[in-house]
Length: 472
Image 1: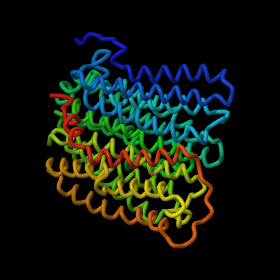
Image 2: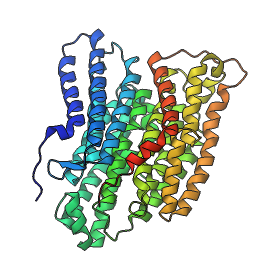
Image 3: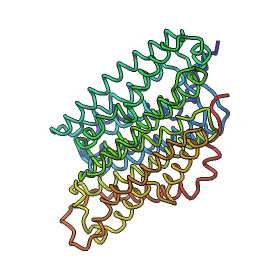
Image 4: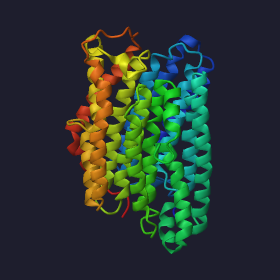
C-alpha cells in the first residue's frame, strides 16, 4: 500500500491559488469599491508564483502526493503552467471592465476557484478526485456565466448549469460502476483490476465518465451549452469558459486512457475517434454562416476539440501522443484567448460587419486578430500550426489515417468562416462608429498574438520536454 505522503509543497501551485481565493474573499469584504482591484492583483500574483512553482516541480522526478490520488508528472506540470497562464490572461482581460464594480472581488475569486478545480482535474489519479475537481471547476463557472445578471446571462447560466448537472450525475454514476468493476478508485490499482472485470461493466462506466469530461471540454455530443453560454455571458467569461476548463479536462481524459484503461479490451480508440470526427465537423458546419463573433468563436472551440482529441485516440499506439496534446493545448490557449481579447477590446462590435474598415483605425488590434484567427486555422508560423502538425503526425503514426484526412479537410473548410471575419476589416468602406474598449484587452490581444508566434518558432526544446512518458 502506498503511504500518504501529505506534503503540501507538492501541491504548491494549487495551494497558492486556493489561499489567494480565500484571502481575497475575506479582504474583499472590507475593501472599498475603488480598491477591489487589489484582489485581482493578488490573484495575478498567485498565478505568477504558481507558474514558477510548477516550472520548478516539472524538473523533479515523477512523484505522487496524498497516496496515489494526485500525480506530478509532465502532463500535470505542463497543464499547470498552461492553466495558470490562461487564468492570468483572463484576469488581465477583466481588470478594465470590472474596475470599481460592486462585485469585482467576487469575479476574481470565482475565476480562481474554477481554475483550481481545473488544476485538480489535470493531476487527478483517482476517480474520487476527478469528481471533486469536476464540481470545483463547474460550480463557480455556472455563476460566472450569469455574472452580469441580465436576461442573456441568466439564460446562459441556466443552460450551462442544467447540462453540467445532468452530465455530472451521469459521470458520478460512471465512477460508481467503475468502482464496482475494479473495487477501487485509484488509477494504478484500476489498471490491474479492470482487465479482469466484466467488459460490459467497464464499458458502461467509462462511457458515463467520459460524458462528464466531454461536457467540460465542450465536445460532441455534450456541446449544446457552448454557443448559448458563450453568447449570453460576458466576453471575458466566454474566453475563460472556452479555454481554461478544456485544459484540465483533456489532461484528465488523457490520463484516464493512458493508465486505468490502457490494458482493457474496450474499444476506446474507436469511440474517441468518432467523437473527434463529429466535434471537428459539426463545429465547422455550424460556424460557417455565423455573423455574431462570439457565437462564431463558440463553434470554433467545438471544432478545436476534435483536433485536441486526436492524440487521445492513439494513446499507447505512438510516442507522439503526449507532446502533441500538450503543445496543442498551449498553442490553442494563447490563440483562443487572443481572439476573445479582441472581442473584449471592441465591446460594441458584436457582428462581423461591425469590423468593417477597422484595419485602418485599429491596425495593431486587427493585426492581432488576424494572427489569432489564422492561427486557429493552423497557419505557419503560429503555435497551432505546429500543434496540428504534431497531432496529425501522432494520429497517422497510430494508424488513423482516415481521421487525419478528415481533420485536414476540416482545417481547409474552417478557413472560410475565419476569412469572413477578417475580410471586412480591410474593406475600403468607412468603418462604423465603434467605441473602444479597455486598453488592457488590446494589450492582451497583442501579447497573445506574439506568444502564439513565439511558441511556434521556439517549439523544438518544448516538444522534447513534453514528450517524457507519464507511465510505464
